[in-house]
Structures are given as C-alpha cells and as structure tokens.
Image (cartoon, rainbow, N blue to C red; front, top):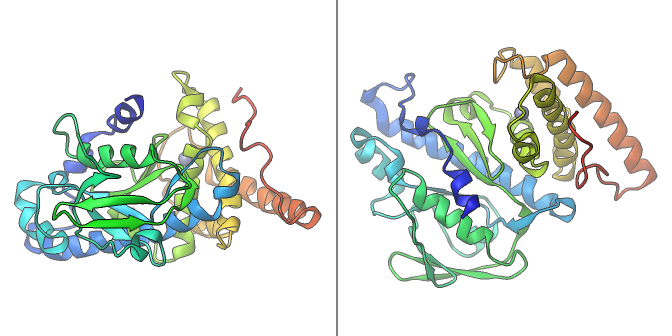
Length: 310
Ligand SMILES: [Zn+2]
C-alpha cells in the first residue's frame, strides 16, 4: 500500500475556495472547473500514450480524470452536483476525445463501483481516498489487456487497453499552481484557466509528468538541497521537450509559456531562473533535432538511467 500512502501525502488545500469566484456564482465555477478537467484529460492522454514506447513505467491510461464530491465544501455540493450528477461514489470528471474511455461509452458523471470485478475498498474518509483507490486499482492491472469497469448502477463497460507513461492527473481547487508527487500530476483550476493555448498547457503538464517519469521524488529523497532540486527542474524541462515532440506538440511552446508567464510557478531559490530554463529547453530542442536526423526513432538515452543529481 506504499503507492496509496504516497498519494495521500497531498495537502488538504483542495478544500480551500478560490477567492476569485464569489459564492454567488458557484455553478459557473464548476462549469469552468469541468472545462479545465476536460482540457487536462485531453492533453494528459495524448502526452502519456504517445510516449509509452520509451517510458520506463507503463500503466493503463484510459483517458479519464476522476473526482469525488467529497472534495468540495458543503456549500458547494449543489453547484457541483449540477455539473457532475449526484451519488456517493468516485466519478468520471472528464474523458479525452478518442480515448478508450470514450470508446467504452464512459462519460462525465458515471460513478465507479468496481474495476475488473473488484469493488473499490477505500480505507479512510479523506476527500480523495476513493479516487486514489480507483487510481491504484487501475495501475495494478496489466497495461496491455482490456479491462472492465462497473458503475454504481451495475452497468459494465469493457475498456480497451491503452498503455501510457505512468501517472494520474488532477485539477485542484487551490494549493501549488502545478506539482507532481511521483504518482500524480496536479494543476490548479486558476493556472489551467490562465493558459489559453493548448500547446502551452501541454508544456506545463509535460514538465510535471517528466518529474514523475524521472522519479524525482524518490531520487531526491530527504536531501532536497537547492542544487539538487534545480537539477531535477532542468531534467524535467529537458525531458518535457521529448514528450512534447513525441505527442506532436511544438516543444518551443514551453519557451512561449515562460516568456509570457513572468511570475514563477514556485517562488523559491530551489527553482532555476527563467532565463536558465529557456536556455536548457532551447539546447535540448537542438540536441533532439540532431538526434532525430541521425535516427528518427531516437529517444532520450538518459531517461531510464538518469545521472546522479550531484
Ligand atoms: Zn518542476
């Protein structure tokens, strides 16, 4: 259960209310929240499955985002139910176009009771425990075989297999603007909404997904000195270039994002200055292009065996 424990280390900042949205218009907020979930589902599905052939760890990526009404305050339950439907179970919040989840006729609001006939058995009552339990149950399935989901009405859905780089994805109400904890990529509603361009959104998600692929949380361990954290940031920037290109996105979208987004995502000495990141991204784009001229199937050779952080 180590995986589940790691997921649960997330702060409970998800319970905070984004101040930009007054209580008067919570229905509009949840419509917007679900829109950003749909954008994240689309980009995450594309990035994770298009690069599956060289990610070291593969799992099922059905192209969905999961949620739970327990994540939302009591005063928001009515507005959230108007968007996601009612029911006391984890549910599908978004489905990527063309994904196995969509082909299996899974839609927003479908509530999950079992995966491959195994009823979800969450331990505890944390706001995301039921979602995390479903994520862990699915990640334990064979990434190369079709599987079955049962909803709370007893309907069964046969979902085609879809191997992808291992990670779950979530839109948050608050907390850090974007983060990755080894298993989950998280982004706030406000950050996602501030990025109109899908390629720039993909650049941010590719960076966070890179942290998970490169096992940065595990590799840093307890020594999170500024120098070591900066190394992980630049590694993630570089791998994101390959993920973007592999999924058919323009890797230079990351540079556009950093040029436009003057305020750092995390204001800390552990994060390299914007100018340094742009140089790293530009040089990785050049290195990738040269590698692909020599071998169209080139992959980042250091992905499975990254050098020590020192
Ligand atoms: Zn980062």
